[in-house]
Image (cartoon, rainbow, N blue to C red; front, side, top):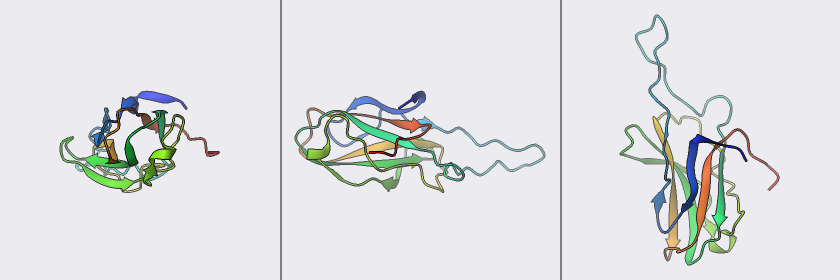
Length: 142
């Protein structure tokens, strides 16, 4: 998997409880087309899919399960969960595990900032790391 540093949300980030991704993607301010007084409307979900890759780099312990959520914000302070992946049991959270969802950013994603949120159920883990980010494409044979 090829990651661009500017689109990397977590780089072997240790997850020791509920946590936001270490990095946030700033989509910038939409521009205004020549001759218009109104800026473009943002929707990064329209057109081609914007694929996300989320994988486990270190096996998790202690927790019961983990869910990865996609969150957006207009101001990088107030966050809204726009989608959540399936809840994954601890037994599956081993090195090399690739999350099926969230697979891509959904249509209607129009806020300026995007991050992931890791929702831990059960006891806080003392081991477990995740790498996640936007990629050019995902392998579909897992």
